[in-house]
Image 1 (cartoon, rainbow, N blue to C red):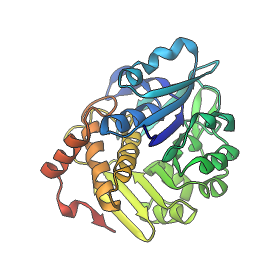
Image 2: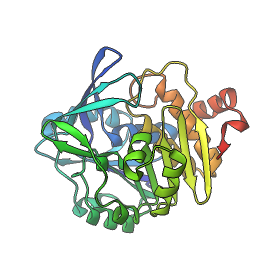
Image 3: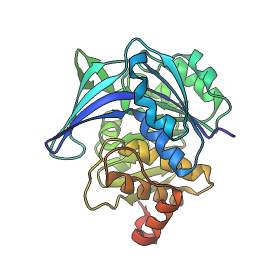
Image 4: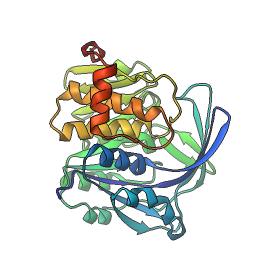
Length: 298
């Protein structure tokens, strides 16, 4: 079977306190991304690093039939998140960090349509890795980890030091509103998307609590999330990016792919954990809950 996405990143041991409720769970960018891709119908391989005693964290991936390549690490990346008054206010504590990825790990990505890189901290991937990954296939980056430096047991939010060099090798770029502001120095997401696009990526996605922006060439589009009660904030961006990639792999244009991503993310936000529905349910939700005018041209 042809490989759509080869996803590299750490599957993590996590916990959170959200609206007063404590919950332990499995997380990490490739966890949420790969489950969404698989349930939507795309073929994905996960390349991850964790300690042997934590391989049980991969059970759901194995149960879904996702191809997982585990590279042994002394530690598993582990974090605790405390949420504030809004979904975008969160404080991360670091419990442990897994080994970084190197260019030798790319041998496990065999002719994919996309190589996905999902860092959790500034040390997970380096510039050489990005350069080599781009030679394998178009490169997809979720930037979050490049704005998170580990200082003792806490995360310090920082600008990505080698962003101008790194962004030259990225084809599809994703950030949330906070990360986009850190990278560009502006809270205006219209301006931020334009700056990020000018640094190299052909497609720039920015998620916010309201919805998702897409900058592709000179076009800027926005589509809102539509959900009554948010129960599952963790994995929002990973699901949004996964569903966008799936739509593009299905041949959808920018507007339809953005609409599909917003609808899939809305369904994920209704409950904790990864996306639980497939492509047909997302398309049905679009028909029932979205209008043509919900894709706004800015």
